[in-house]
Length: 256
Image (tube, rainbow, N blue to C red; front, top):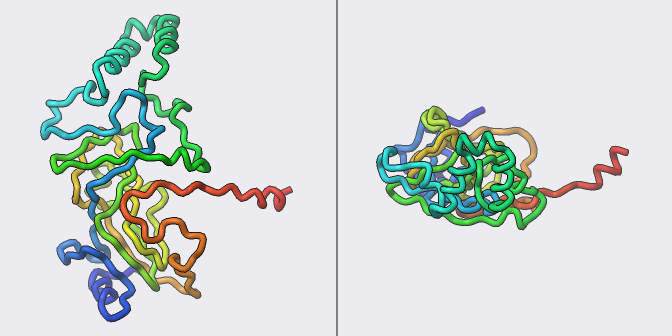
């Protein structure tokens, strides 16, 4: 059963509240949810950024002021990109392959299928990130990059099941604020890490409304997240990279 807005307020009161949301403003309370906001910090896995490119661009307030060249760190990288992707070179496969072999560290086609940029979920080294600050003027995100964001709000939840989702307006701008990790746990305490993707180059701003948090009641004996020795993300602050995903090899014995 999902909590209404007034019930959320009720559960936030008393000496031992079931819900803590900090900061909190009643203007962000909906019929059955509370609006969450994007913090001013993003993180990107270093190995997913093509050499010579920028993971994001500071917005200048007018899309006409931007070109494809803005995605490149320097004119050399951009010129190689243009040359390799020109119609003449596309037709001359041998010449293109030669250019690629000579400049194999440059971002030729932004093809995210290139194994050069793969992530091994079990390897902690693959979760090394760079930090990006979102300026007040806005930041343009790329459709070829995945971003870790965070909510401004710190929340604590007890005796309830919390989960987050995108707002309707966020969805209609084709901003995905979480992939599969929109569900929280009874006992989770922390800021929420967001897995952000965009369909088009899209501008985001610090403190923009990025999603909503909902609360549902559950049945059964409690197993609070903050009392689970195997929980990874309790008390997390800011965009938090993935913990290495374990490979449970004991299952191999059970399935033989």
